[in-house]
Amino acid sequence: MQPQPKRERTIGYVVSTWPRLSQTFVLNEILSLEERGLDLRIFSAKDPTEQLVNAKVADVRAPVFYLAFHGRYSKIFFGNLRIASRQPGRYLKTLAHALGYGRRDILQRFFQAGYLAEQLRRDSVAHLHAHFATAPATVAMFTHELTGVPFTFTAHARDIYSDTQPELLRAEMKRSRSVVTVTEYNRRHLRQIDPSLNGKVRCIDSIFDFSGFDFQWPRVSGLAAPLILSVARLVEKKGLEDLILAADILRWQGQRFRMQIIGDGHRRQVLDNKIAALGLEEHVTLSGAQTHEEVKLAYGRAHVFALPCVVAADGDRDGLPNVLIEAMASGVPVVSTTVVGIPELIESERHGLLVPPGEPRALANALERLLADASLRDRLARAARARIEERFSSERIAERLMNLFFPSEEGKQCRHS
Image (cartoon, rainbow, N blue to C red):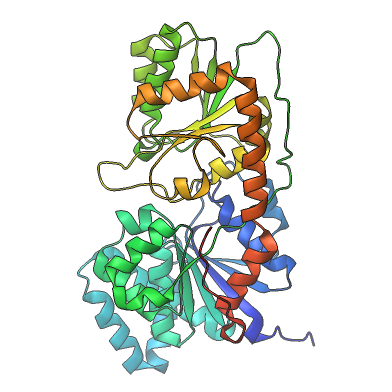
């Protein structure tokens, strides 16, 4: 008979979709914790739909359990029925909580939680950790109410600024053991939602895997025009329309360059139309989604990396884009904007160049400075790599996460320098 895993060291990760190409920070976190001996389970609220998968997913040992309704209606129904029959009072109280939000999607999260609760009854999970305050944290919260298993969650960006109603977010924070976020900007925002819960909110960086991100300097050279690279989902908050307008300004100024934008999203046609309207087809390329390995190669070809983030019309915004960290680790000098937590990572003129959001001319000027000045690119790139190595120590970050999961080892609250 095989020995049973130790319940007190088993963590269940609740995520929106597993695997997802754009969420390397979740993958890195899971791999890092497994390297430190934690026994993990992965619970995905949705089935995967992307064809491209990060190759490192194959290294994850944790079994994956899907909670999506499609093809599982009977399993979800009977899972809820068994939980309700065992603890009818707790089940009805949690159901009333879910119904109180008056939203169908929240009720769906409740039934997913009932299904997950039944799975936890058979499995050895002592703690749940959710990524994003949307479906994952809501499922974790209802599962906690149904089972008593404690939970924590990491809040990122869109999930706390536009996707989660304040009452629901307040409830998730109140019932959680701790809340993690990646910037002080986010922490201040969460504190405003419920000042009484400020002590629960911890600022902990995402884990960054440095493998494959070797610092390359000097950058590639030759007869080809220098490459300006951007890697982003094609959504409003990435500011890619501003980047295309900046490309138009550079072109009219006689600057030699190529621009490649890697990523996909619902604004693909909008960006294609803008490129065509400005006659930039020979300068700007939308390359679509690519594997993480292909993106790493693109960093090696780039002279400059640009991500001109903005606050979208619906309030959506980035927390701390992982691609900025990747570019800085690869030795690519970066240009970005002064929104949300980006200034916490990049001190302008020291680790990169920052410009105000929504100002294509300022963006073009910053790009022109870097393209024209190799010594500036060198200085910023070296300082940026040192900054990344200092801040994103996987051992330190993993230890702080483990301290949250296991209260007896709880560490001090993070404050970035």
